[in-house]
Image (cartoon, rainbow, N blue to C red):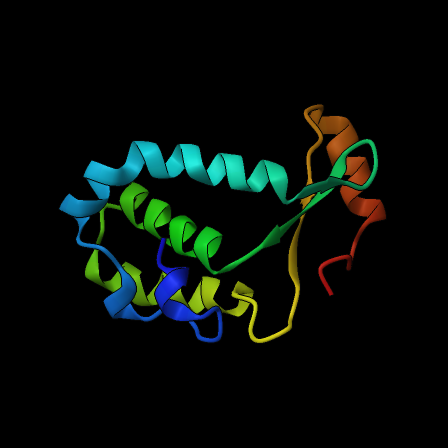
Length: 120
């Protein structure tokens, strides 16, 4: 994984992005690895909330997966880096993603209204 070279002290750069052909070859094992890492870093907070503590590797894999889904367009690389780099922990920082998972649409709408502003 790339963190061995990154030292977890920097953002993901354009030259850290694998060519599409390389990612296609690695996609299946990387997705399995990502799911395994995420399950170890996931903490249930309540009946429909959990947090995933992310690291450089998880964000690196997420960027690649998003680029794959979007067709690896050149313009998308900078967009994904801009979107995901703020989530890469720097130094001693800890970053967690809050997941709100409610299957029922009516319950989800009600809960999201109650949680308005939670992203701040």
